[in-house]
Length: 272
Picture 1 (cartoon, rainbow, N blue to C red):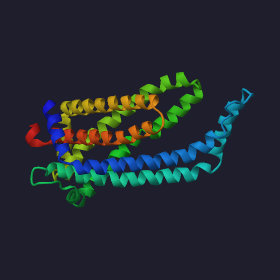
Picture 2: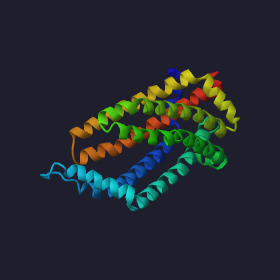
Picture 3: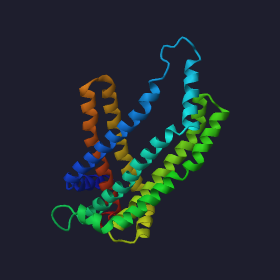
Picture 4: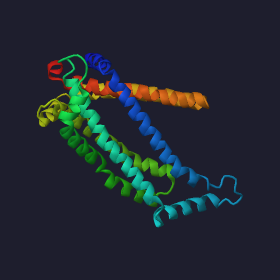
């Protein structure tokens, strides 16, 4: 596993300018998503009865909010805008992946990277696989969301409801993780002009090192996020904002390292 991580790090360093692109991509996406959420949530929270003497005021606030969400068209515009933002993301992300994975495969063929060439040559296959992966990941939610809602109606206490829902959520997370790893290998194969099913079989054969490499780097990413979040609670003002924005660069670096290390597990000449 150590060799996969080291080779993945070397491959990451060869794609420094891609790191800058990923950083700007995450920064812009986070900014627009934050502005969207703020424009929807802030007007609703402005009506929250903070110091109202009537103890039923909070309950009435939630009843009113539920009525406005489900009985009026106030949420249609917000949902349409949110769907448009995610559609743009689902178009842009596989294009970046196609160029990056192609460049990984040909990183030793010549100097520099071949991201733009990879986008032109591999975008169709990688995009199709990415959309299938997204559909398979989201499909269980068609059952899980109504299930969670019915469980809440039977057990309105928040703590008990979350406890009962937790096994289903963990099952969905494990499913999503497994689907992502399988389709990641298939996208590597597609970007490398190899048979897609060969990537699927290779993911099954190398499931243990693939999972170990991914979980190790995800653990590092979660630890770094926890440190930054804790610092954000301790600091206030411009320092907290600057730290949060700078951390997007670290997140982009870790994300690129994860993909590069996974590719090293996939790579035939280093993995067989």
